[in-house]
Length: 267
Ligand code: FES
Image (cartoon, rainbow, N blue to C red; front, top):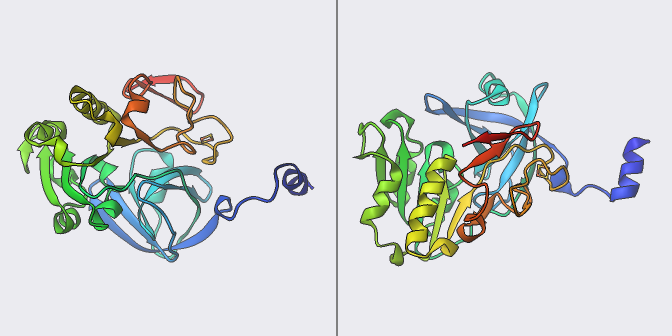
């Protein structure tokens, strides 16, 4: 009865809003804390779009697609820890893809930190990225080095200097001619992305720079309001997760996020 009433009130759910049960076909350990899970169905998607992943009996969480049939997961909480206990042949539920994804250019620069390389890998494989800046704390935490090296001019920075330049990935920007790129795509820890935004603002190119945000999400489809950012009220799930730099300049971006109760947590 409830399903009938909701359908009558809201209309029939769109196909992408219904969970699809998929079977895990492969699990790859990418770094000590990151694994890629491949499944038996392909999703038509744009780089940067995400799916809501239902881990049976635990929770439903947003994850970017790292290919048409895979997600790449960092073990950071209850749901991701439960995912790390899954095996080949297990079933998870996926809704989506949702959100807007990155804009494509012809001469792109990509900047990624940690697991932020996951939504940028499909963009790199589409041959539009000239230069890829990849950062992590240490060599073993660098994600997709071989895959990105195959299709881009890959430049690496590690905090401890175990591979590439020593220091933050943002320092690599100082040696680039940013005018040579028509679009810049960024994904990683928000403090790192805010540092990139500050650098591109110095040369007035924040409009051609796009950032992928991560926020607490309940519904994933623009209804619950749990992922809204201040002060615009844009919903990360529906209006993002990718936002142009000029939209983020005077926002909560890089300053705080909200937890499940809506309480602010400093970045
Ligand atoms: S997660 Fe519900 S509005 Fe974005």
